[in-house]
Amino acid sequence: MLLKHLFEDKNDKAQDAKELLDKVSTPSAISKATQLLRQILQKINPTQTIDEPPVSEDLTTDKEFAKNAIDEIAKTGNQEQLNAVISFLRGAELNELSSKAILANISQGIKGGLDQKLGQLVQNINAPFDQKEVFLNKMASGDGFWDGNDLLKNNKGNIYAKFNDTILKQIAKPIALQIRGALGYGPDQGPGEFLLALTGKGIGLAEKSDLMINGVGVEVKTDNGGIVNTQTGKKSRAGGRLYSTSGYGNASSARLAMYKTMADNGVPTELLAQYNWPKKVAGVKPPTGGLNFNTAGIGNLNSIFKQYLGQDGARKVLKSMVDAFYTDLPEGMDSQFISLAQSDGTIDPVQAQVELIAMAHDYYRNQEGHDYIMVFNSNNGEYVMIKDGNDVRSLMKSGDLKSTAAFDFFDDRSKGSPQLLTK
Image: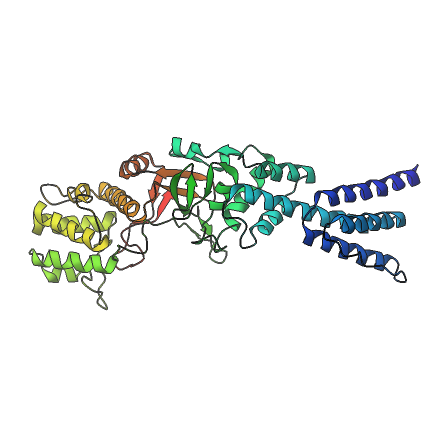
């Protein structure tokens, strides 16, 4: 009975290999398969002369040679070599299905080895091979695993929670984190963009924005969810900022503009020097918060506004800050931010940061021309969709949208926008 079982097993494996061979249609994969089979036959019988398969314009001859070679290997009972052939052909089929999946979902085609990256991620998943086939065939249908319109209907939710497919649940985060960067599709793709384009019905890569969802342009900003430094053990979290390549000043230009406005309107320069304004002075340690745009810093600004400037002067300072950050600002876009200065000149620290982000969003949208900003947490899948400043206000009020510590007027990376995070 044992010999019968072994005989049946090797024949089953040979049949599996030949069935896999029939599924592969990429000439380069078939060519590599025939090379592998020739090497195995030569290894099994070093004295045997293996003829090269005749040159053919189609794959029929190569496949016939390969099937005969598989039968020869099966006759030897070498299970290890049959497994090697099956493993290779499975990889070839998954790569071929990956190519079809990409072509069905990304109109720009295959670039930067995207098919191989996707195929390898699928191969690495711990799941039966037939489930992987079903998964990629589903992706290649172009029908999506979920409706991309969900993102436009619901301005907050969780991408990973939308996935019911067993394989997709395992592979979603690796796709989001590992398939990214400069792959030849225009600007570098950030985490999550390929995941959304490959799995969401009606979602594709865009020429101008990051994604198009049924004709709606969406710019994706990534919240990394927090990365642990392996050396220090500390966790740092970074989000996306709302600025583009043109139409922006920086924190230094805003600081100098605000300094001039305050000095011109009666604020003693000696007082401002205590905060290292207009420039840092060796040995001078400013009060906590400095004059930065965070809770403590705004508290310090409020003391100056209340004592020296009043409402009119404070609004002039806020206006100088806005104009320095956003150099092409449409008239009236800053009105809600400027009007934060109350009768005594002070501004609410929390509301000031919310209004700044709302204005930064609307200005960025005006500059870039997209319809929505999506903040996507690549670690846990949480997302928010922002159409306008009112969405910023409501999402920050609910806690679904947050920011990192607001910007430092000595840090020129900010361009008038703190980093945005999900909850």
